Length: 449
Image: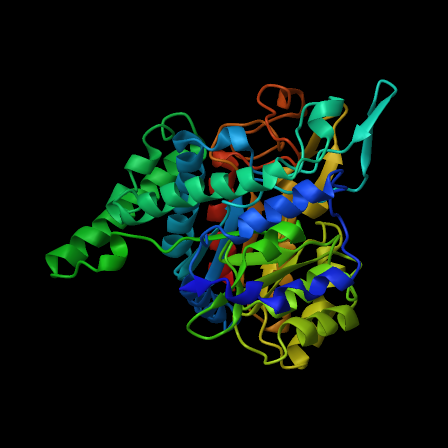
């Protein structure tokens, strides 16, 4: 179990350091009250589950498995419904089935889910029609509506984030262990989708192959328990440090600190300052840690991150999530991988092909081209193939809904279509059809390695 032993002094050392991207809370007494209440709440995840994910990511770092990490750009309180959660999970399960079967590789499944309610922003204010207000920083901080009242940071929202995350995790656990994730459901996951979508039809053909393989195994007397349930882990960016440290507990088994808000947490491109609070916080906890690396990252910075976050060179402890952009990945990534690998570090290398490929359409919508997303993944695989290293996985922003936020894909969305179902509060996400297209293409690339 995980307990609050003396609210873990080691989890607060970050407070002496500069912390980027933190909300400007107007009422600090209200914030202290909320933190004290959060410190009394039960853990959202068990420290032993974090250890289990660290072992699975160790297999990724050693080249024995592939990480599929995906979910919303930013979760919303009004999207904590059975339908929204099921659709996201369904998409990830379908992608996982494609990658496992077509790529012939064990797939570690991690959602950007049950905690991804906070977003770093490039500007602290937003101006519309001459009116300037604080920028929207995610439902954990303020409201999306462009009104003065909605945009005031409210610490009570941190408690809402906890409860929304708990409700989401509860349903995800029920789905993944209660029969919904049974591999014999591969057709059922697709029933609402197959007729209208080229990727759905391609998936259905793969599902028939999986069926035949499972029937063969059953005829041979083999029915593994692993076919009936699925391991599924939660992750989010550890952005709002007051929330993350309030949910940091001492593990009674080991005496180590764990951030029990999620199984894996990551540090973003905007908050990975080597002398900053986020790096200090992450260095103190035993969760698997991810760090986003953009095109400005130097090999020395990457090596310093390894020293600070993974001094024992433990496979599965540290995941580098690279977000270079399709036009830079082939130039910027090789030296990073080469130098880090030469140092003896055992990191998992993952590609985030979303964040480096955003542009604004003429309509004013932020969007991404599916072809750019795919090209960055191709570049990522090419770099690792040339260096003889392992392309460890993909990290994507996606939804299980039929949104029109990214252009392209097999079931093509055009720029003029963006307005039809543009529902994201922050960044554009792949829809279900585009996500499946990506899974098939990644499986082919992985096989070619």
